[in-house]
Image 1 (cartoon, rainbow, N blue to C red):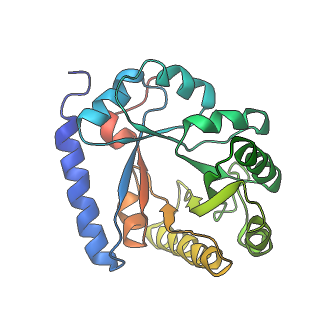
Image 2 (cartoon, one colour):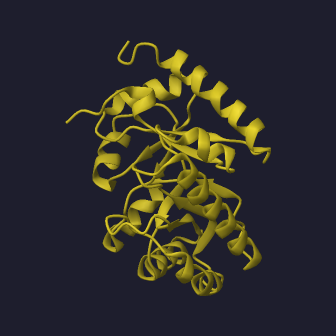
Length: 227
């Protein structure tokens, strides 16, 4: 087996998620998105066999190459930055987690209209204020939420955020709670924003306590990434 012990790790993560849901009191269903970046196609296959049918990739080119070699029906999520000239690749993904600018929103909308089906997206929020991270600030979100309602080629399904790697536990709670509140702003603006994509291998339990519906897990499932 390529990833020995994966089924047991998945069971352990599921148990921790269930406990975190109970602690948080939000009662949400949580989907694990298995992040397979830098691993080969065998990671997606192993995830599927372990009961994880949602797979996340950061880079379009790496994802497309992998898709061609994966023979199980996983649902592909694009979780990394998308260049506007590659929006046609969205045909291959069930959800874009990283809608990070008005220009990308316009390009994705144009593609959605052209294909006759809206693109499902999450608005990426930069709540940590780190320059290395993309996404909207909270002050940008409200006017953009109202503008996005008019874009018929995209459907805003919720928000995505990443906490700072150096955040304390209380800072993690605050970041993830802010993302949940931002999702409420999207709902109030008229979006079907039921999803909260937040939490990775190091902080997913806190994210789930704060209402995460999608957690993006790589290292905890597959081990350290290949270089």
